[in-house]
Length: 612
Ligand code: M6R
Image (cartoon, rainbow, N blue to C red):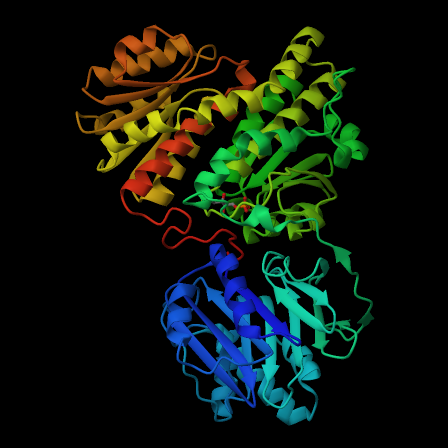
């Protein structure tokens, strides 16, 4: 979490940093700050959004061509002005921004306190700033060297940028465990947590690797080395991102834009992967590993949040179509429970951001134990993508809204393609059924488009439920993870308590919650336990619950008993989740907007969860 930005060059740094921070606000938004060098280091920081910082800085001196900025998601210390970054050293001549956690900050702080350092904030970051100054003084070395030596003492994760008062044309950056990208312009450098603050200035970027430190100095080539002092040559690559993709494009919220983009993002996630003549699925990134997956004892899917829900759908798909045993694990649990993993296991990590700390740690553990580690990721060049032995990108385009929508449907699309590919290669799926699914999957973008047309209807429906205190989401089979995802989406952006359950489990507990005030979203599409779900709806109605049913177009049985219905186009059962999820996204979105919630930046959340 947290977003960092920096600039050194011939332009005004402040507007570049502010704009960059606004693009990175999805990473954290409880406070923000800048440090600008102009003779001395001016630090301005404010609790709240970047807009609050901008208002606060209005009458301040912001003239500078070197600066660093930070938008925070609090870990150590409450969100307030003092704990906001940048933090400064004892003499206030060094300023630093940090994304990550310095785990051993307490012992370093104790040591430094003994040597007369006093601290203003409760953060781990401030301690690192003081340590750098202490090392610099003691060893009489440059800032670059002082940062390197200090980081050798640090345990934890970081992406940092450091400046000092006497160095008017230099920023030092370093990375371990948190993302950092450097933009290389004409006699200027940019730095940021992702490429979005950089894209309009340069397409040439260097993704710093873990354990690397760089000096960005005007008039010189970037100097790159490891924390262990091994010189390295920066690998400059060209960005493929475009500006349009990261702007709202006339929509009120990124989330709505991203929901509406799904016909395209789903098509993009399939593009070039389906051969229309041979009906063959080609996932280039996995080609070398196909046999390994087919022969695997099992596939262990590791992920968090929405990506974990996509993983659950993957379990149904792989077992159903390819007959490969699957276990789906929360990365955060998997990494700490001494799991049994062998070389015959294939571990598949799913992540939109590619930076989720728990997923990364779980992958590392699986690798150490000899498993093949694959990734399904949206962000090209992200840490998870780089750590994977092989994988597939989802190609959904940048997802800015904190609530994941188009990345989820793209993940499910890629998982479906993967299951189809494996099933055909393994011979576990009848050729006629395979071809039916292939031709149906090609119709999905158009079907999603038709569902986007229901937006007004779902908005009307949302108005009826905007004041509900609780929601229950029920589904069976392929629609059970959809129920979980529907509930997560509602709670994270509208702050209404919601639970997702397998429909048949309702009678083992949640049924006690049902009364005339409880809205229950039931995904009751044709096929897949349809009659059983109809019985579950009867049980809800017998207790006066309010049923909003997601049904297949033309359904009559559910229509008779449900209070409200949302129709989705008919599609083969394994493809249903991509469609049945769409109305639930819209329902959450409209309810949250009607409750005046900040849908793109819900409280306490961040898009990229780079801490444990
Ligand atoms: O970037 P990742 O897919 O690894 O993120 C995992 C979760 O943090 C993420 O899905 C989170 O649950 C979203 N807020 C859901 O909308």
